Length: 68
Image (tube, rainbow, N blue to C red):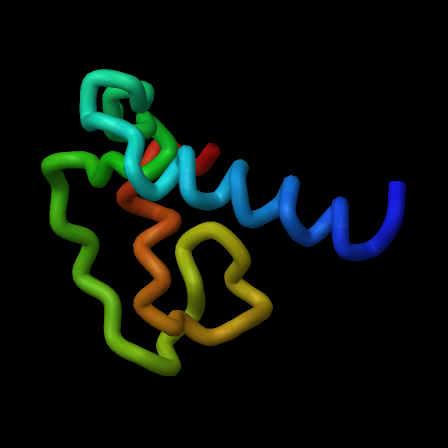
């Protein structure tokens, strides 16, 4: 396969994906790893992290998530 043939193939694949109907795509489902628990942990930036006390809290939210 020449470089020009490869470029044509790549363009055809991209064009088919761009013009695909929404029904052709997989439905978007929220991931459980992004869910936040319904609790509020009183944290202050710079205070010790609840998960890893040797570092300061940077408000990442890991302590109130499922942590996956």
